[in-house]
Length: 171
Image (cartoon, rainbow, N blue to C red; front, side, top):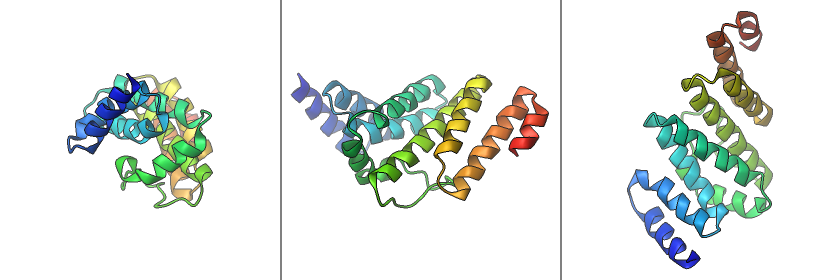
């Protein structure tokens, strides 16, 4: 059964349909290969946000966070680094073009996943949860641009919540 899921995931991941990332990730997960699923889950999460499917985006980002914090970190980091084009966002002000080690790749993915999860929660009106995710993104930020981005999102979420003094401190 796992070999069938691996075969299906390989075919879906090799195709050109941008909507197939989530389906391919599901097959990799069913085959027990979280490392191969991780970059596809990030790509699927971004697509879900664009399609305004915030619940699905939240699921994908949460699953990515569980994977990068799991036991197979080296394999996950290698796969994420190799398939960076799937999940890298050139418009991310805190993005780093390349990473020299596995820990840096995992840290960057954690930041991106917390940031994306915060965005999806904000749109869903779950501002307290979004603030917690933006705080986590801030904690993972290694670059000044990433820290500024997280602080801006924190400030905006606090402002939307009506906490103006807290928002001013974040901005």
